[in-house]
Length: 268
Image 1: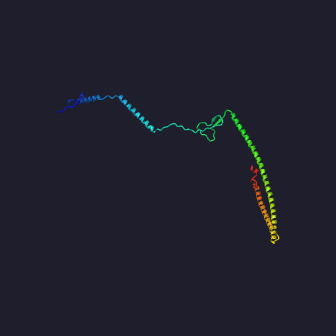
Image 2: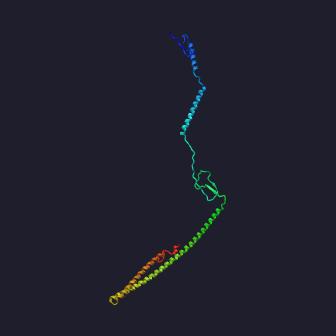
């Protein structure tokens, strides 16, 4: 016995249909089954789908913005305002007035010796003018005093020069006279020495003969020795005076009770 084909009924359970149903019945059965299946599926709301899509797009956009901010803080450069302190120079003026800057702008370059500013005193400072005039008068008085002092010193110097020259000449003449006197004394001592020598020889000869006593011979010998010492002293005196004369001619005085230069020469 051949079983009959199964068909799907509207009550959603299987039933046996006779094999004699044709292709038309099977077609209708498939069409009904598809219609029931589509009817049982949930209805898709297009508005909900659109909102979900919008929320997804907005979330992705916010995520991209957040990532950009977080990553950009690490790679982006930063800047801040800074202040540079310039060098300050204080310029003071002895007078009051109006300052006019010659520099066109602050921070401009200037060359050495260039004019920076001008100070103009609009008011006539009489007190300052009188003070300067008084200072000028005092300076002129001091200058005149120094000129007079210089002229007085020049006159005194000339007078001292004349005195020093006259003293030197007089000193030279005085030493020359002493040398002449000493040489005369030297000649006299030489004469006395010759005389004493002759007397000593004669007394020695007479004493040898026994005609004259020994005392007379001793006096003759003493006279000879004294004459010899006087001659030597005169010679040394001449040498000393000649040395003093040479120094006096050079302006240096080495005599007894005399400085190396006169007081007039020391005051020049």
